[in-house]
Image 1 (cartoon, rainbow, N blue to C red):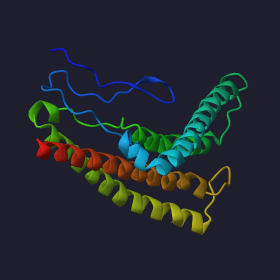
Image 2: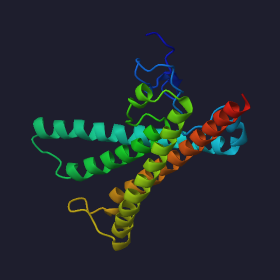
Image 3: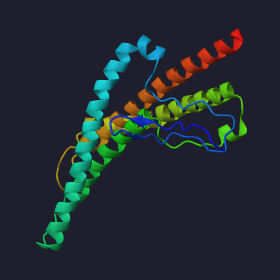
Length: 214
């Protein structure tokens, strides 16, 4: 069947979003909502949208920076090992440091764009659009609970590492530098999921209100 694609360019890369439903879904399913409010809700939450835009830029820059650092580290290690036969022993620690920050900040960024993994069979089974919106909201709430639970233990461990002042084996750097990525990653991810839940709830209530007026 032919239907309008819900993929659309998203900043900053301008590439098509990977949020979509199976082409067999009929009727046209409601569009997926992300953590970023749009339309009337964006006007009401203007200060949140403005603050988030600044945070998104900072987050994006740090993700790129850690990714480049990790790639450069891998390249330098290859040269040192196979050209000069003198590998850098501390690469395991540095690779984990850059990789952890790249990964956990990336989790928050992907959650912001709503491009984390989700199932698509819902729209093939449930035809009522408000029911689809309700299930999506429920799944977001469950995601928030999961992030809060896992984040609690992860952040608790990270704070323990920071407070005890443990040092890494080779570089002798504070292990809290590695663990701190958990704090920023889980807090950022949870915050974006809360924003997404607010966005989904406002959209669901708006459509329920229009349905009652008919």
